[in-house]
Length: 143
Image 1 (cartoon, rainbow, N blue to C red):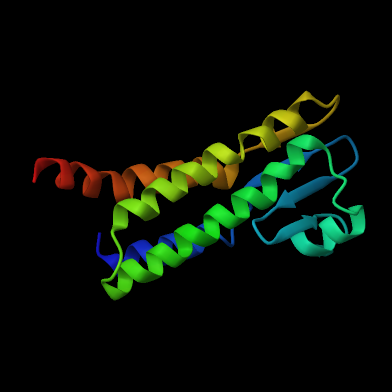
Image 2 (cartoon, helix red, strand yellow):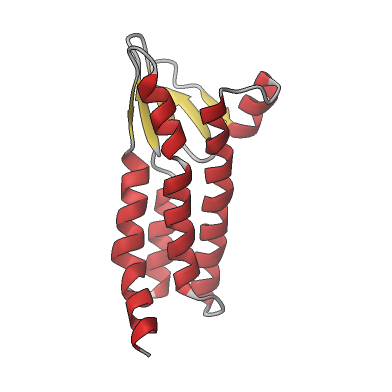
């Protein structure tokens, strides 16, 4: 896969929901930039959410902004890769770190009674890291 295609795939990971959270009354889509209530269609950006809560969120939700920052790093690295100035292995590593950093969010919501957290984008992120970036890691090891 060429660097520009890898960049397009990494960009796509930022616009699909990372987690779909279902509860008895609502479905919420969690993106790296914010969350959307399916019923209302209202978008709450991540910085608005943190300001509204005063930063006092459940401990497992603190992983969400960390994952967003790691994803931003992978996006910057993918842009650099498309321009030929970055090592693509960094992008793959940051995608894996983003997926792993989001695990507390999944666990936290899944432990709540009546909630189910479906890791849509996070599973895709791991698949992209394996499919698009792992061959580059293997090729570097063979050199």
